[in-house]
Image (cartoon, rainbow, N blue to C red; front, side):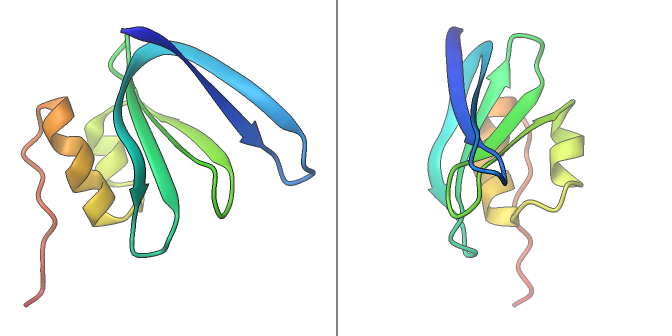
Length: 94
């Protein structure tokens, strides 16, 4: 586990920095909606998701179940699953 520092820009253009202990599990994942997602697992097993483009945000989710129900793209969730020990797979309607 390492100290992770994330810079987040709010809607007024103010930049804040958030720091926590954890490990990055997904870096610069580009989903279909073109958002560049990042994810980490904290020392307390929470999942942190942040993005810097096109919008900047930072969210802490208690568990993988919360992540799966959160509305993030299924391809991004499936990229996080192996690092958290989950067997989630993106369901395709084909």
